[in-house]
Image (tube, rainbow, N blue to C red):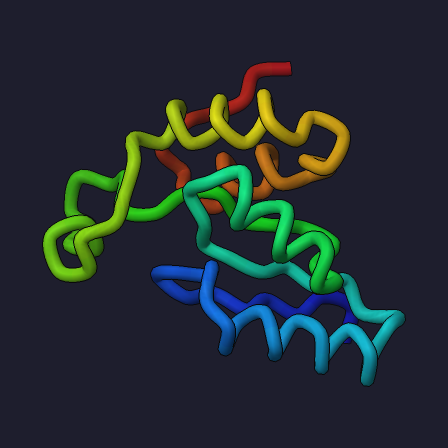
Length: 109
């Protein structure tokens, strides 16, 4: 296995952070992706816990019910801007991963 993804509707929780720490300590060679988050603080916490890539985006999709059910969510581009402005040096591949994962925004090269 090359990549492991911890994918939950609200990735800024003690349980997710603890799992990221445990998995990275146990399997340091695996690329670890964790998320989903919507704030710069959450992004920082997951990177510091050991995530190699952090998925940014909670409840941005038109059919997603996370905002209604969980009461959390921010428009996708606003989330990217918040995270990028706060932690530009830590973003790594997060923006690209989240964009590709959501399939809501396409990248043009």
